Image (cartoon, rainbow, N blue to C red; front, side, top):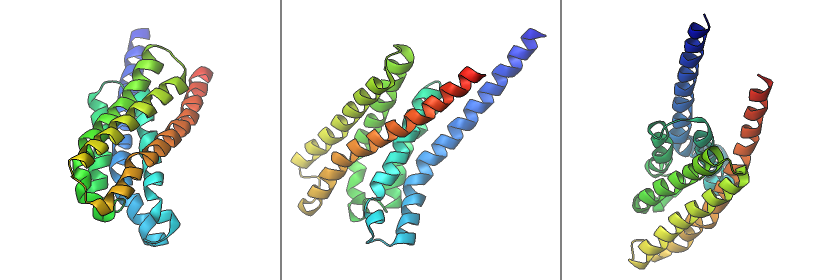
Length: 201
């Protein structure tokens, strides 16, 4: 009887994880396109909110990345969360607007940066049992260094038009730092709620 119960619980947890994977991957793909479009439509392309859509969308995506790192097992389930946001952002064209075609060159660095953030939590928090915020700080710093460093490298080779460099430099540096930090903080609240619920059960 106990063996049957354990198998049932295991199967249920597997299904729950699949649902989590699908939901988080959907958020990672849909948010950069549809939320950015919604913000632009509702508030207007020249509004303060629309001009800061990268911060709003980026914070949600980074939250999804950290929650995925903590809750999803196996890298196959996380690949979609790592790759989809940047592809969706470029295809949507609402966040970077006229600079969107040039963001194609940044996709590999963004994927690598997202992977670094997830790896920091999986390795430092889950495997090594270090403090949540240590994992967060390491993940944020490495992610920003990868993305900003790659941008600076491409800038040296003249990939980006001079008129776009200043805005993209901010987007690939300061904005990445802000959105990753917000994502880590929001995820911490979710993480503590999950821990509390697990302890109660």
